[in-house]
Length: 391
Image (cartoon, rainbow, N blue to C red; front, side, top):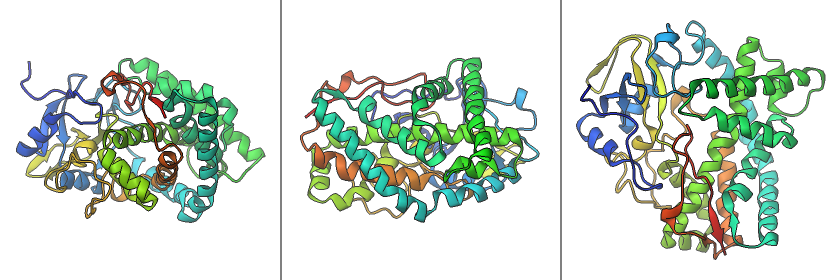
């Protein structure tokens, strides 16, 4: 039995991360650990060290022998290697060139008015039905789903269908279950992309329809965009609401000055940790990080939630402070060539939410004790099962 630290680390508060990250980082910001699948890996929990890995093209998502590669979890999508080892870099570069215009600042400015209308409509519906309500199901889930449907060109009427696929894709316990759901999602979205070749629209899937990429890559990208485009934002809305409800001083500051919404979103993205799963990378050759030699083929786990609370970078890192002067941007969206192309979309949605929600419902509060909130422990993205509120 290995005496190495074993993932996942336990935590007692839905709004905190495990204290094990800080203890380990103090000794070894790049440390040897054992994953949930019993494989050995390098856990990177330091801010500077994680940025090094993100920026170094000697690390990737693929592995030369994927069947025998060490894994972080049983999840098919994010628990192990992904993509073709020989073509990963080229595909990644073509993908970024293709998708960057779709998420341009200009396109996001145009979209922001539509997001505002969707937020207001959902809040109108919430108020009309009256308290109490499950904010997760009535607001946090439908907003990102509707936005991503319009941006990609996916029928919103299919939301129950693809939401079920997305839920199954996050399964951490059953590889076959999550793999089958990912295959189903890719097939579903690729059929929409194919239809765009006959009937193009002003959307991202139309751009994908003419992309110079292998068909299987187009299908994987289409499925990944629909999944990532709503799943993580749902959690950030829920956790942002919780962070404010737990801290009346910060909520009061936002209510007095709605222009703080943008800074609040960055602080939510830094502090919120719906999942502690981490991001998978594999060394393509021997690499030295923080005095540690990582061998070719080794699994590297990027604990971005820990790096975002690195006390070497942030003063009082566990404190939620929307007036914090940010010198070092959080790594919740990655870094360098691996910075999330959809970051601008998430920011538009979240800024609109936190500029509007509490001003519309200033007496919003939890309808149950905070310690009664439950989370998805067996899902890749974690998150709350529900968020009961009243006002």
